[in-house]
Each structure stands twice: as structure tokens, then as C-alpha cells.
Length: 221
Ligand code: G3P
Image 1: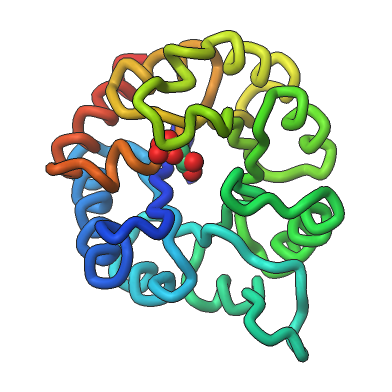
Image 2: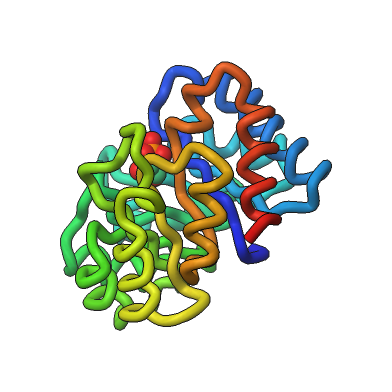
């Protein structure tokens, strides 16, 4: 996956599930093709196979479980996520924290099956503690800003600076409240290699336009 990247987490917004997930994924693919920017999406496990088959951009799972084939009713098996066409997975999202033991095991299973990992952390300090487990990228998202109107870039530029300083270069994504091009430009100019966002795109009236504008922020940096 090319960096810098914009990863849009579809979560379980109605506008980003089922047939809507497919349509929104195609919009991302279109913007990626038209602009040459690196765009990726994270979709729910039910829609994953259908979406991954339909588009030619990296598709992430939103979560998986650190298990192998066997008696694990209701769990999400990393091998099947890979087989469904996923490029990688988010792990430990603020809306689905899993604790250190599961983080370590999940990262191990992802390496075994060949899934790219974006490990989420609530603070730069947590990110610093987690980087030793060797995820491919760490996404720092202050939980109190998730889904809100004020972005991490504007409310907490020091958070981005600290995260990059504590975790290292080429490793940090930031997210929470990202919704305009300036948010992206600020994040990148402070050393992040991409952004993770959701509502700014999934709840937009015109996601195509919003994505084009966000890519403008990427190019500006
Ligand atoms: O995974 C991205 C997310 O938690 C940020 O959400 O809606 O603040 O962009 P949002």
C-alpha cells in the first residue's frame, strides 16, 4: 500500500453497509484512479468479500480474532479474511479494544496469513508501548474526538508530533474528526503518513466530492 494513505473506516454506518458499502467502495476506487492518490477502506466482515472482489483498492477488515480453524463459534478467522480478499485489518480500534494479549496474538496470526496490520492506539504513549509488537502501521486516535467536528489535526497537533516522535517515522496514521483537506495537510506536515477517518466521508452528502477534497489536502502536504 502506497503512503501517504487515506483510510476510510466504513464502521457500521447505514450509508456504508450492504449495497451502500459497495457503492461507496466504488466511489473510493474512482477517486483513487482519477487522482492517483492512495485510498483504502475498512469494511464490516459481512460485506468484505463482495467489496474486495468489486474494487481494486486495498480493503481492510475492521477487526479479527486471534484464532485458528476450529471450534470458535461467531469469531472472525484471519485465514478467511485473507481468503475473502482483504489486504489487511484494523486492530484494537477505540470502538473495539482488545487488550495486549489479543493484540500480540492477532498480529502474529496476521503475519502468518499475510495481512497488513493497522493497530489503533488512543494516545501517543500507548502507541509507543504497542509499536514493539511490530504492527505495519499505528493509528493514533484520541477517543474523545472520534465522530466529532473538531479534528485531531486542529485540536491536538501536539498529539501528532508526539506520536511521530515516540513511534518513529513512516509508521503513524492519525484519526478522529478528520473532515477537510486542511486536516490532512496538517497531519502530514507533522509527520503522519496518512489519516484514518470515517464520518467525514460516510455521512457526507457527496462522498465523491469530499474524497476529492481530502486528496487535495494530501497533495498539498
Ligand atoms: O476509524 C476512524 C475513526 O475512528 C474516526 O472516526 O468519524 O471521527 O472520522 P471519525
